[in-house]
Image (tube, helix red, strand yellow):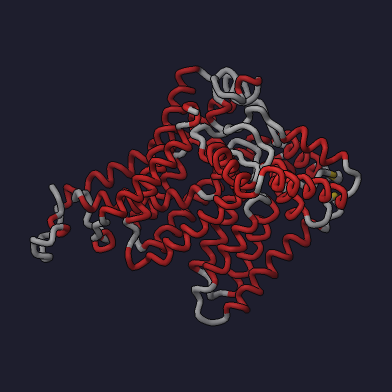
Length: 468
């Protein structure tokens, strides 16, 4: 039964939709909760049984740093990596007697908090409670996020810290105490993951400039909190860190990214050889001279426009690939074939997890493009801001060394847009009458064609690599 209020030939004063038609929404919510619980139980199980997951990539380094700091010793490391994840691990290990299970539990709780924060942020931005709970639920039923709750990379900590910063700037920006707390969280964000720090500095003013008065004062309060955390971390006697690590890390990522050869993670990897060349240079100055000289030489030799076109044809496949750090570690994945990841996981379980991951990811890509064109008209300025953030992120990834895990930081925006699409569709077919005025919008043909084109490109980048 359709809600006739969407058709202009009918009067607007129509009877309210019967309660029975809202049942699918309640059923959907229960199914989402059951799916999320099942997913996290399954991921926890395969991470420990029949044998523990084998660490890979940067995980052993982060674990070594955490254990070293937890034992009261000094940890010396290359400044290309952010220092806060080992500090975070050290705190948990110190309090729990070295329990790695405690790390997984804490990160799972942080993921739950991140989902709640995304739900509240989405509700505030769109004005829809439905969009809020849908976007938050998507984070909890998305296999990749569930996987990272059991990994040792800083993705979950970084995600929760920056979402908490955004929540404060949306809901508590008039309180100087809360703003200082946002600054502390921003400091955690900046020192736990380097790659997207320019993006955070772009998004921060967007949130604060929505306050009519006292913007400079609020920026100063947030900045003071962030600088306090950064000062404590980078001046600690227990951490041997060099100057300007964020800038140095960005240059290194661009240097490696311009020389990537494969359209997929972990295929023909080159990071190791470039890192060895990097550390062979005895000083920071010589390292930067080496990287900048080769970046400029590559641009002049190939031509800057051709170089960027080449990057676009490679890096976006790496970024948006259907496979993730979870599916690649399952049997049959490129990481699992190297002896790392989930060894011993039953094949049927691996196939189900991959199917769920691929299917949900494809649906999010399509629905997010629909959500962008049906975004509530009264809140369209927020949509423009979110699209600007996504565009800026894509520019960063155009020249940087890219892995699929880097997209976790902007996928919450896709979840928000997906929530818009699902809420709009539910209102159109009469499943819900809640906040129906937000979705009384019929996009034009041009908008649908544009959305179809964007969705097709995204799906090709995600699933079409084997065809090339």
